[in-house]
Image 1 (cartoon, helix red, strand yellow):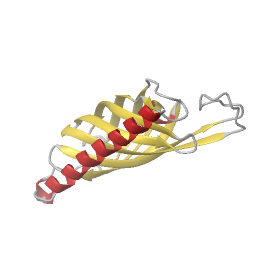
Image 2: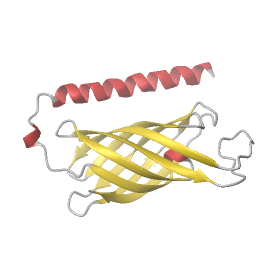
Image 3: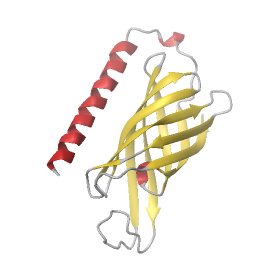
Length: 168
């Protein structure tokens, strides 16, 4: 338990530092030199940050030429009798909301993605490392990632997710 709290705080500090450096560096670049990007994305994620599935919205902030910061949130609904938090508790229904922050490293349409999310109401932190394809021409979005749970109610559990969606 103590180790997972330290791990969560360490990961939070790590990503906060990465994000901070991205914004500091972004202040030296001209916005006009950045390529046109699709800022809004909606996608379905199978597995991933919310357990079995989630519907998500994300906004992409231009930070630097090769680094982008995203903020978003998703939700999933589990019907009567769902046991998604690993405690054995049966819920009549459960709505899981997952705010998330990601850093994208790459150019044009291909990115390495790293981020954190938090499953509200389940009190679970999720980490993301993965690949992201986001077409600037067609708007097609694909993500594949390793999304392990860290500490919390579920404990530390390896997990993965696939996302398909549209950017506009």
